[in-house]
Each structure stands twice: as C-alpha cells, then as structure tokens.
Image 1 (cartoon, rainbow, N blue to C red):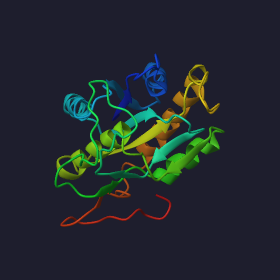
Image 2: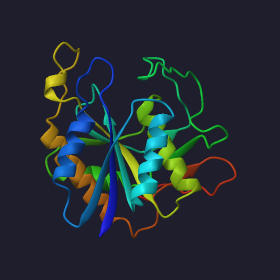
Image 3: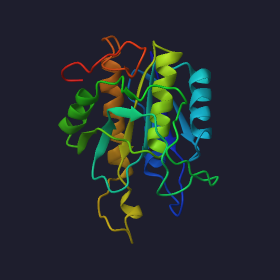
Image 4: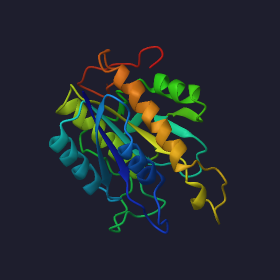
Length: 227
C-alpha cells in the first residue's frame, strides 16, 4: 500500500478557519482507496513549519507528500510547479511575529526546484471530475512557498526516492464575507480535488521524476511533456 503524507496549515491572522486544514481533515476521514494516509497540520511559522514537516516525514516514512495551503483570491485548486529559494513576507508576519524580507529559505540552496509531481496530469484529472483546477507557476514568497521549497530541498538532498509537491485551495464560502473577493470552494469539493490529486500522483510514482533542481552544481531535470 502506498504511504501518503498530507499536510495543511493551521488558521492564521483573523481567520478562524483554514481551507486547507478543513479539506485535509475530510480527506483524512475518507482517504483514496489503496492509500495509507497520514495527515499533519503545520504551524503558520517560518522554520517551525519545515521542521514539523520533516518530523512527519521521518515518523511516517511516506512514498508521497502532498502539502496544501490556502490560496486566498484564487478561484480554483492550483497545483504549484516551482518553489523558489526566497522568503519575502512583505504582506504580514507569521504567528510568532517573524517577517523575513529577501531571505533564502535554505542558505546556499539552489535558486529553485521543480515539483516532482506530474503537475499537468494532476490538474487534468481534477478538471475531468468537474472541479476547477489550474497549474500555478508561483506559490508566492510567503509560507506556502517556504514549505514547498523545504519539501523539495529535503527530497533533493536527503530522500531522492520520495515524491512531493504543493497545492493551494480557495477560501471556504464562509471566509469571503467582508473580503474583496467572492472566489471560494466548499471544503467537500476541495477535499475531493485533493483525493483526485493524490490518486493521480500515486499513479505516476513508478515513472521517472518530472522535475527536481534548477541550480548550480546539480543535475537538472526539466519537466517531461505533460508533466
């Protein structure tokens, strides 16, 4: 049985809810068939979030990691393609008040990593089920990208047999009141999208990696067509 680690972020700021956490709980309660799934919540804190991710990977020894976060103002499930080595929290500090500006996620790390998921295949599978989904080429420079890069760096430097990537989920309908956006998705729909993403990623586990490092002194893998 394939072992999958699913992560989500705790609520942050004035939000009492996190769309990724609510959807993740539903996936954990009803995981895809043939999958042994472990669910872990990550703190909305620089450094601590990657440390907790690493502890969950060491504890569960997964074959696949799907990390998720909230994509406010995004109308669909977005699967991230590139993680960049940059923390730039110009919008808001984390839960502990940390607000790094123009700092690397990993000092001396490569400039960027490609996701090792079949990004386009995952998006196509979610779309086929009638759930809005797109490929995203930026996870920003806040904590979503921070964890995505941390995961990719862990895979590239310590666990080359592991696959993983990041997806962002829209606000829940209850979160858009008083905001300048009406874009939202129910937790049930988002959870089903994540289940489909997991199934698509699991199906590709025995294929060559679709992408790893973009940086000096490392072998570079460019995404395969369709990846």
